[in-house]
Length: 140
Image (cartoon, rainbow, N blue to C red; front, top):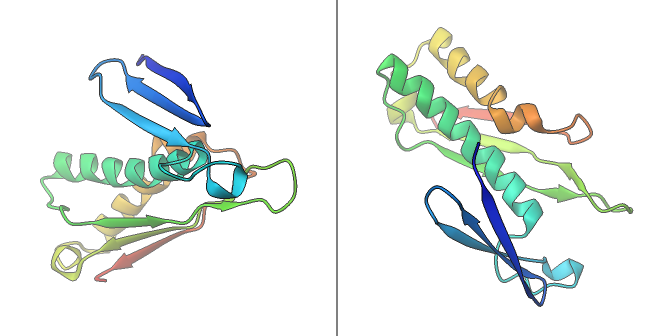
């Protein structure tokens, strides 16, 4: 169990602190929803959590197998619904594995890494109402 402590500062800004490390981050409401957009919005953090969770679980698998995956990138686009109630509608994900890394993996290893991304804890925690198309770019 991990404790997260959040404090509302006013002006649609919150400061959250990670209990174990005491690291903190700010969130702001997005500019299209009464905010300043000066930092990640809460829904931006969902998209961030998805992408970083995928990279992390791939990294954990690679560590267990003795594979090198340093240098992978992920791009997540957060798309909100047009109609109320306001919520995340889609989170298209593009994972890029550079050619210098991709060349070391056969089809079986690639499928294992892809499965680890598809089954990361954040992905498994998202409701089916959020569409999450995932594209892997091996070598680019």
